[in-house]
Length: 243
Ligand code: ADP
Ligand code: MG
Image (cartoon, rainbow, N blue to C red; front, top):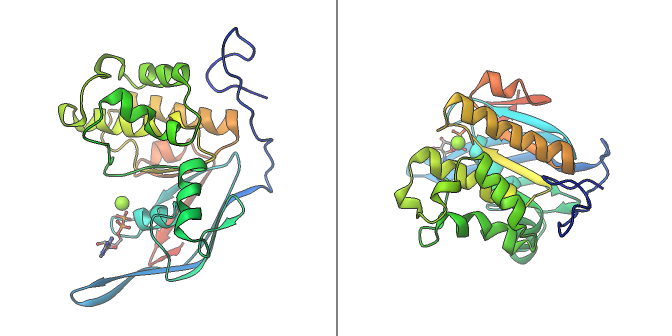
């Protein structure tokens, strides 16, 4: 057992049970996934048969040109939208077959998605936004949240509201909110896009720490070759498939 963030057994601190790392332990698999969107000019196919697997403890960079379907793929993997065809299995649950309630349960308990557009809750301050997902997941840990806020440079703006934050600060809240809940599957959509290089590096270190200490799987969209190089593998979307 390894705690994430604090030494095990320290007085009054929670010790988190973690899953044993097993490379055959698939957290996410996509098989033949297709997705098209209806537009004024008829349907546009974005994903044309995507195959991809991610194991527990594995980190993958997802790359591809703008419009190649990276965000679409993450939204499908998070169960926010349904594929047209193909199979998507998350932590042993076939979400292509799951109903809304099961997909919602997986999103709450297992999957953490850092949205490209942040999707912070405007009526909640930074502290409450940070706590939101961990509370839903029943894993709220004030000390871990405080450590995340410190590392992400948010400690001084915990009582501000999203509209009072810069784009980079909003992005850091979105990242902290996801990591606070210690998801088993982390899907991150260009999480360092609005950050300076040093902050981007610190954020990357946090993601990698979650992966190595809890055996989470990480699928991260990034345009930075430098940051992609710090992940274990790389998959590229091109013409609706993994190239
Ligand atoms: P990426 O994240 O790689 O930039 P996206 O997954 O956001 O790509 O989008 C892929 C393509 O699908 C784009 O051409 C985009 O305009 C289109 N698209 C995305 N979402 C929708 C939607 N809800 N309705 C119609 N078209 C969409
Ligand atoms: Mg995108």
